[in-house]
Length: 196
Image 1 (cartoon, rainbow, N blue to C red):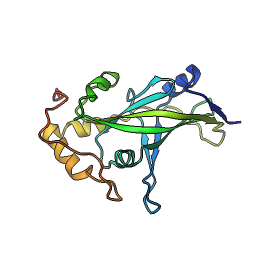
Image 2 (cartoon, rainbow, N blue to C red; image 1 turned 30 degrees about the vertical axis):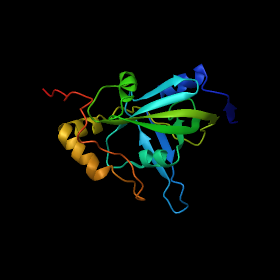
Image 3 (spheres, helix red, strand yellow; image 1 turned 90 degrees about the horizontal axis):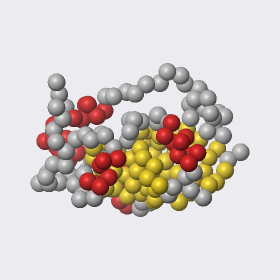
């Protein structure tokens, strides 16, 4: 049976840290707007900050729905589910905010995560509700491994290419809401990666 918790317990934190994938759900306020669910799964990009706060490193990608929705209304749900022996689903409901790579605050969050010029922001969530359910209907998967394509794909664009990509792909949501604001005049936060 499912349970609601006052906060993220040490045992739940251990469960979170053992998962290889999580899902982020957000939605605009408009009743005609599209609900978005994004899968995430790069090791080291999710952090439990304390029993009521979590954060994850947001990597530059082809859309910016989560950013747009959080800027409009802040609602967010993060879901973890085990595809291994322990059948469990965990949901964190809360209010999220976007800390862009162009924000001074980003420097305080970046050390928690792998450093990469592919980073677009950190999503910080104040957790308001923690609940789990059985997960008995989920399949078992074995032998899963990290797919290390996204960060490398974005890093190969270089700083200028990433900036141009964000202007083209991340400025608005699919419903036309303002999303990621690229500041081309800003000082770069990260150094260029070195490729052997």
